[in-house]
Image 1: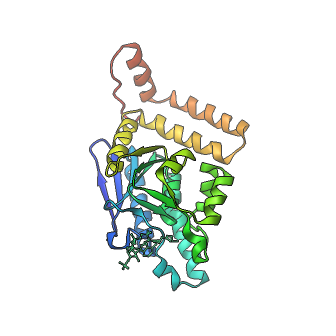
Image 2: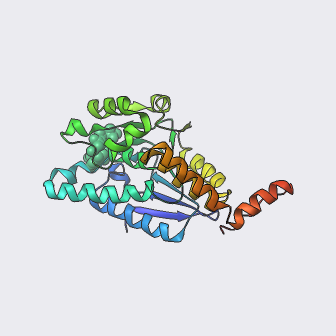
Image 3: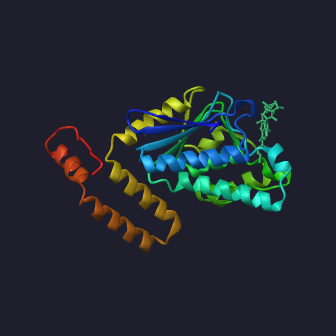
Length: 258
Ligand code: COA
């Protein structure tokens, strides 16, 4: 474990940092494997939220490692895409909310990591783009599938086909990022949001994420049925009794995750 560090905060929030600063945190197969292994480990620990960020102030992740990809044959490229998809699925399908704290370049695979998260918070110096076609390849870590779902097909296709790099103002405008914060503050802002999430009923947050994810996968009738089931299930938890009881009794709720 060399390139990925995990910090576990007292409030149940985990911060995963990709630290390969001399290469602007570029993703070679080892980095991607480490991201996946750490996310898998976190899944079994059951944090309340996961933040993912890049080390240093220049880059979130400047993409997949072009030097490593240059030497790959088609089978190795397939394997690289597969480990990337597996790692991204652990973010996207993580039972708990995931937040990308984007502190600089989020290009190619970096943008794909951000897109696999539930929420994106970017610093003013961040920039975004899919440069893959300028290299003769395409976004292979979920970008062609997640970008259209997040910013809509027309904008996603423009970004993917042109490889154009955009700044935070445009990223905010197209709904790619939730919030823009001053340079150096992305992680702090992500921690604040994660703390707010962690203070809520954890089972409720998990069911809410599962229901919102379902909206992207199924027709609305099935989605609404799923929502009703998730809603009903929460009434069997101690947390729901505590949360609603605390409101009526005018006190702060103490959630136990049961
Ligand atoms: N893969 C491999 N190495 C990368 C990289 C990547 N995606 N992005 C940056 N690096 C390396 C550079 O090669 C350089 O290494 P070196 O010092 O050993 O030469 C180091 O990181 C610093 O990058 P550098 O290019 O010198 O910084 P810069 O400020 O001039 O430019 C970028 C920054 C992000 C604009 C530029 O590095 C870049 O275009 N990177 C590639 C982005 C990309 O195409 N990503 C998608 C890949 S599918």
